[in-house]
Length: 157
Image (cartoon, rainbow, N blue to C red; front, side):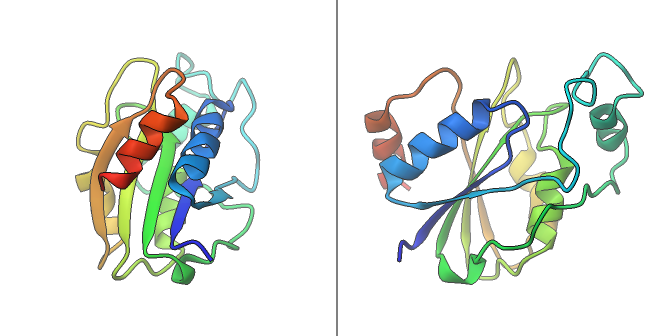
């Protein structure tokens, strides 16, 4: 059993491709965080203030429901947590995920994909959703990072 988990949420497939490469590079297991109701293209239209993603991100208490709660968090010491950046932070489904498990004593390393913004204060913002965990600002992994670059990064943490 690997002591490393790469958990990720991906709305369009970009973060998923990066997470798959990171899991291979880090020798970790892979877990996809899925919403109970998948996002449609219209749901992701950030230019529409009435789109599902816009409504969720404008409501700090929003916690989109997960499709499952099958992640075996207790089996892992180190968790890479990946997501696309929405409105300069993690999508609220990441908070749902963090609040659904006990991360006490775990190290969570963030990684993200983004069309224009960085991680900003995401680690600090998410810390209240995983008390007892050590959460680390990781990297923005845009483009197509090589498996070797991902391996070096994973080994450096």
